[in-house]
Length: 112
Length: 115
Image (tube, chains in turn red, purple):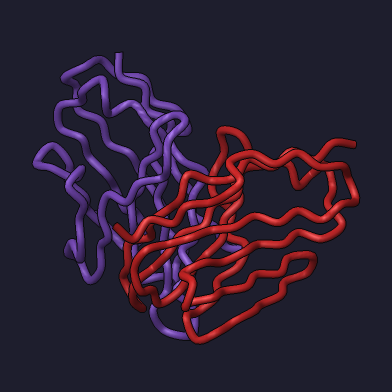
């Protein structure tokens, strides 16, 4: 399957530290997207990286993509308590109408 | 900032009843999607919709499910005869194809509880 799988499944760090979450997938992709979900709420889009890109930044977020290893990482720098949430990667195989295949997610807890 | 909206936020129904979940995608978007998330599990794709027809559907999206865009703004998911295992959070999403992004923007979800 195309599934994105994140690791670790859970991560607990102190406020101010950096948090790194990883995602692996199995098939070729067009793009990979990271989403955040606060408990019981909707999915908030964080960042999209295309298969021909290696790194993208957005504020305190840094995403890398290694298509040879079929993996991506999401780095959140200078974490805040408000970053506490579940983080999911989702892969898309082509442009336009595409089903996103989500991983199981990483539950991130930022301790004050 | 434009956003996807969904109603109701929570729907409780009896097994065997029909439910309609409603979504208003972002106005200039052309692709629409439904996903679901059973409690504690992954978000799963159900169906994508473009140009008034289904583009792709998953194995989950069987004959009990249907989608419709009844007017220029709403996008609905109907479950004809609900089962206990249909209990989940249902998310609507939309994306634009013109321009440079395939980002899918998700609504806040409808929590469906089947008793």
